[in-house]
Image (tube, rainbow, N blue to C red; front, side):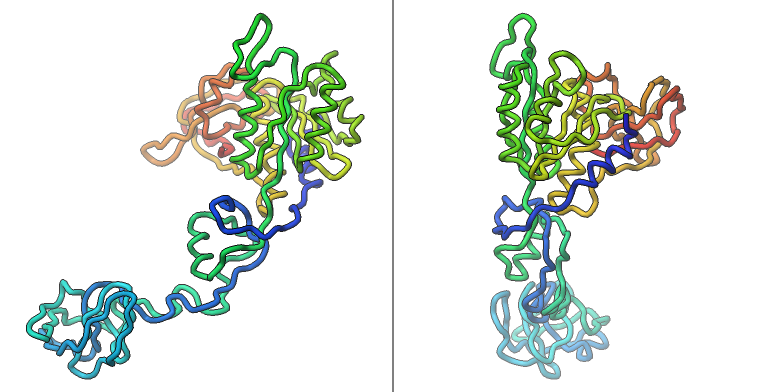
Length: 400
């Protein structure tokens, strides 16, 4: 039985980024990771522009009180100045418009009074560069504006558009096949009969996959039958970079997954991890390098196993430099007294307290309790043995 850190290290040892692709910059690329630097093809802004509605002036002409300047033209955003600003002159200008030659500052219209072709400036502290966004202030031609390894977020779409990009070289989202096992399972649209329960792991793992940066493909329920299980898992291996199978990985008579995987050419690297919930957790690699995670059938165990082991693997395949999980230390929002035989990851919520963020343990009855897991936005990490802590004690937290 491996310790958590050793098991995660073994998983990551078999992970490497997928082959890159040319990704069109539609919203479908949101979250993909850039595989090459992005260079600016032009200066941005491509001209010095006004940051306010007002008047483009020479700062030196506005020294003293109530300078009166001749207005020589008006320039709106999208237009181009035709006249340079000389001594004693000003151009009426609007936000985003190019600064005319000769001008070195903008006076806001709130600090000026227009009168019959002239403007009286009532701001005596005008300085060069005031309310002017200089050419190339955001990016200059040839600058690296987004580095390889950058996830494409909403702001990145704007930067890429500014650099004239409609497609980029990026890492694809890993394809994740999801299979659940068990004679007792029926799908959500079926009313369970005696001895049956609805399949919660399939939808949950698909949702976790999306949040983790993968593309899920749900392949259905494998009954406790060797041929059926082999067929479904074989299909999953054929179409996936990562295979998630929930249930059937322990040592019971009906736990067929390890033998099926062996028959499919999967090399199993470990089968148990010293963690609670989720001790029976299998990791293997397929004949084409596919990553295979055999997660426990108990929903909370499957949830935790995904977050600790499968999600970091999906992130590495998707080109992320940092696999996670992300951990921080936060003070407890309530006292805690609990005994566990293994390091335990229990559901918790982040709570804004009077002096900052704290972590509140949630009511939870254990591995089968998905309802108790649902409100969690964090996992509270408890060491093996007696865990007793007062309010305010720092505790390790995995961010979800």
